[in-house]
Image (tube, rainbow, N blue to C red; front, side, top):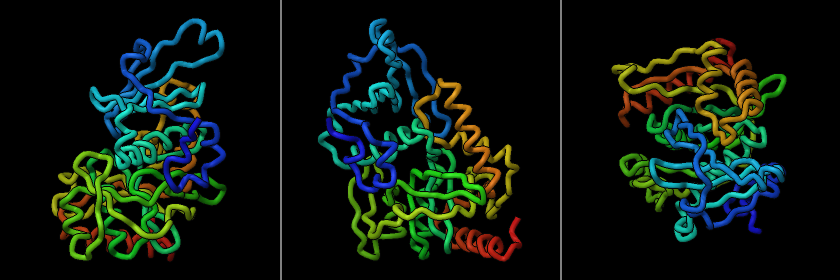
Length: 314
């Protein structure tokens, strides 16, 4: 069977946890078992549904497959028992949509199932360390990462970051250094330089063609910023450090997952996020959502980073 890790580039560091996961374009909503439970992911509004299996399959040890939906549109069905992912056939004919689905939704959830902390974040390399941004979809993670990249900071990822707690810090690694932005962001930041764009998986977004393989480079994580709604800032740039408990809650809400009904998995996720929050400062960040304000936001982040290196930052 074809392997999920062969669908996109950038999976080499995760070859072991992805080993044995296969895929097919054989997902028919009418052939999925009856729904037995449903939950909505707090950061993306995707819904996840568990489906019943036959008594014979349960006797063999099979677990209930889980489907992912965007409204009434089926995105994929993931079976952790058979280690198989089924996608609707139309993804076979849309390389951009397939790449986005696999790199930004399916593989992150498989990694989380394999007990690798995988978060819905954008991230750049600031000096010798990574700085990451999270928040609900639409808060501007990709736009801020794009602005920082244009300011000279290498992009690690605009959607998926794995974090590994160590005794003296946290190691961050992006899954793929792609960049998907709204047309107005592309026009403001990239159009004049002749940078090429193409179709992206998310409707209405453009994919920016990037050089380099920054996502393949793991490195220490310096800080995490939780983006707040623009109206919270007025005309100011505001940043407030969160307590470890508050930070842990935000990290949990912005984590990828598929085992949403598993008590063991939820305990592991909370423990991992607590470890990360205890080792890396997590801040809220609010600012006016105007392109002319982004240089000031970048200056704010660069100043805090330099203060951190000098031992002056909170």
